[in-house]
Length: 139
Image 1 (cartoon, helix red, strand yellow):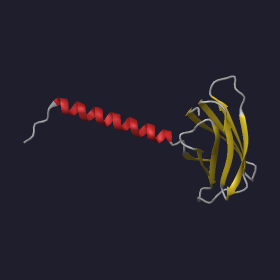
Image 2 (cartoon, rainbow, N blue to C red):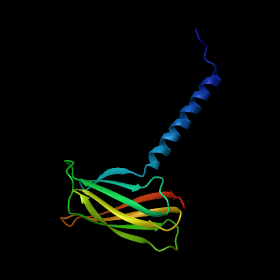
Image 3 (cartoon, rainbow, N blue to C red):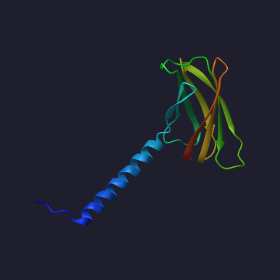
Image 4 (tube, one colour):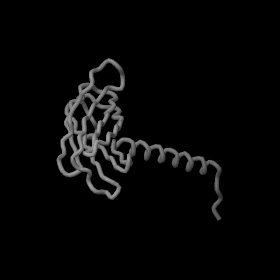
């Protein structure tokens, strides 16, 4: 019968802790999320990954509770540096296919950015969404 040495337990616990931390970082790094607001599922993505200064694409997908695309929404995208003193960047997102909207933006500096989505559905409902884009790399 194998005898358990207390040091082995600590090593295993440390390894599990490190693996859980890595999983959390990988999940946060994809910059993609989805959740429901007023019965509307919102999924957003900023590409390319890793995000760098220059032109980036912000993609937003809207779906109703039955997972049908939400068409004819109006989306204004606003990007602000996380620190004060910089001018925001604005772009309108265009519907590229039913329920999918894209905008191109020029991120002018490396660092942390906050992307605000100002969404107006065809029925007049307004939804505000914030996406943190951390660690934008300089070219």
